[in-house]
Image (tube, rainbow, N blue to C red; front, side):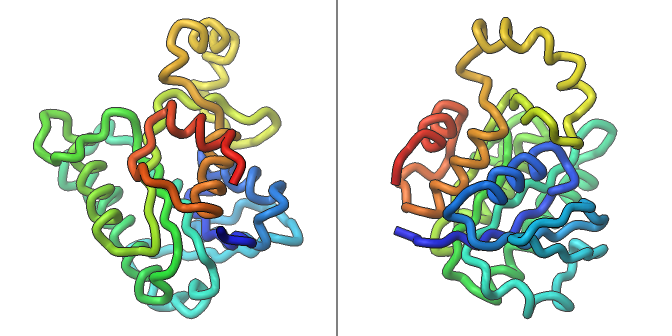
Length: 224
């Protein structure tokens, strides 16, 4: 059992990262949070520290600032729309690999939570390009031998009210979400559930490492 959680969060300028950060800042078991972004989130909080870092292929200059954190919530992601496989690999696999390598070098005794997506291809051989690349990324993290690692595969995520980085599509769809949740409940979870599930993964080790929507919901509710 981990008493206090000190996570590093990437992607906090996006919807998922902002939602996970929100849960961390409001959770009693989270002691401090480091966010690493290419631009500021313009947020202040007693628990929060921010590093602005432009080059996500090289973390040598900030490695010394990473060692005291016992978790990583990697929420950084980009769309595959308009990209070929080489381009998408560079902005997905290469980014994540560089960061995971830097974290492992500074402190391997941490838990790494990676936001992937429903439909990710663990075989890396399927027909869908983005799913292969995400699968390659998941496999790299799982084989990196961190203290622990979990792959989060949400489908439709409902936003946390009041946060500023909610995607336009989600704002448009929000009136229809009750119907969607009723009809497709196995594919819908909340940002709050994603954040709480990550925190609970760090608090206590879990056997299942690839977490689909139903697993995320269960972990969010779990008392450790």
